[in-house]
Image (cartoon, rainbow, N blue to C red; front, top):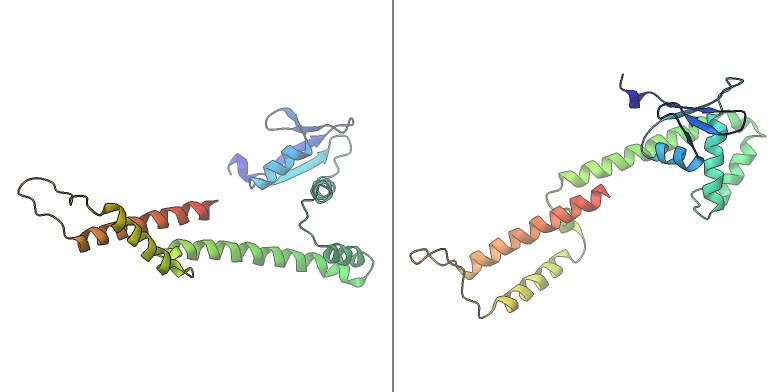
Length: 185
């Protein structure tokens, strides 16, 4: 098993400082949040008692982000969570939340997978054809009066239709490359 497949072990000392056992240095809550965002699982253990403090620190990270205005959880969801601790719904809520987030992750990965299989994802956007026509008209205007490109004295000069076809192919390739870059972001 690779080192990154195991949860990153963080030990909390009596001074409440958090110690990364892999890099042998102290870390902050922001550092732990970065590890998690990078896809790493973490486990935070109290050095003295051996208690698992992971849940407590994850909730603290969420609370700090919410208090900074980086709200992800709407008020009604927070209210329902508070209510679930005092009702019999408490036993259903964790499974429901876990399934909801799993569905969200699956949906996101399917969307990204579908985008990579579309030859030109931009072609499905409203107004794409009009934008393409405008680009072609602009290129014709810009190229008016320029001699056609040639590769030599005895080479055949390309027709304007062939020029437009090649330009169109180049534009399509550029748009597909841009969409691929956007998908990665």
